[in-house]
Image (cartoon, rainbow, N blue to C red):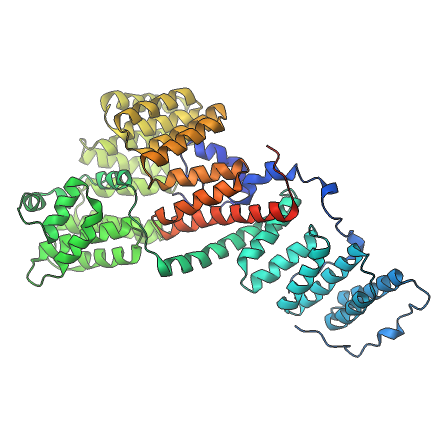
Length: 571
């Protein structure tokens, strides 16, 4: 899944385009439902929010008040005023003290105002509660701040200033769930116009996600990804150590335990048994160096696929630093560790491992192939092209390098606005479909290029054709869903493809994620939450899990706000 530094809210404008080109929706949050709810938010349906003249602006910050702070409230000249006017006078005095940063004194005046305020004056009452909450906030008394904001909101549920202040106080108290609901309400009521609130909401989503992640990982382990995902990962290595002569000999053995069993499971694609078989091998005390390090590499590979990066890196490092390990296995371990470092955003360490691998064997095509992929992920198409060309030069028969090199050249031509080369490499991608009609990447990369060009019908036909060849590949159905969204804006067709994808492969997290996001965009928040809940145990890493949590928590918060404020979706 690709990362994104964009706001959960600002990402909305690019969401549909991103879906169309096959970019996973990262950080798509509350903004997805803006269109559906802001227009239905008729202000006449909501309780009146106090006017600006009633309240004060105090940034969040809070301690318990003094009982009187040495102030004689009776000295305030209120004897000729009616009750409401008396409240206004005490509130005015409180505001004056607040502006002087005399927060304890301000609290005393606000408290006096509250004790005198008629219960029928809901707007005024809520304002004074909010003002006193602001003073508590300044004294870092977050508990009292939350309590007063809650009282203000009981009187006027849509009071944005009270919602915003309570959200910030709740964040200080670590209650990110309710804080997210409150700031979501503010953002929706403001029709996504306040950038500061949007940024704060994103920070709350991240904090809530981290809290959920910590709790989840205490009691759960990551599952292996789909069979298709693992197949593609294994195919990305042209010089796989599990396919060398030694490994092939073990695969033919009649022994069905330990390393022999693990290698047979790779051949038969029984991926679930591999880790246990490797652990069984590593328990032996009489195994050779090659057997032990091969088992460690294989165990590390599937630990990484499962999202257990720390364990994977530990095993790979053991292989890399053990003297006497064959160069091919060391290089493979360095490449895999490099990919983990990049996933963890340790880009410098990622490139260092690849350079170390290149120094061991300057003619290893895999090093250049995987470095090219990292450059492509880093949006450096020029360097990606250079590396892919070298990979192809060293191993011209590796189809994946050839196809991805062409795609990188197409991307670079687009980025440099070279229309002739853009068309040239687009046609070359088309040629790969003809040349390699059974190779999935030939279709998917050409289809992605066509989607970017706006040739949706042709792209859809390609995905349809390759799905007929590989009917177990549910991701292809997700791609079709994304294409029809951009091509026809056909939500019903997209739903059909996504639901079909889940039937084909119930472990396809990409399908659940995309379906959940589409449910959010169409205002079906309960369905979105249910769908994204199913995606949680299918996540392959902490990074992906954080993303799913952000989507799910955003949907939950919006659902709570819709129910709390009585909003009606307008589709």
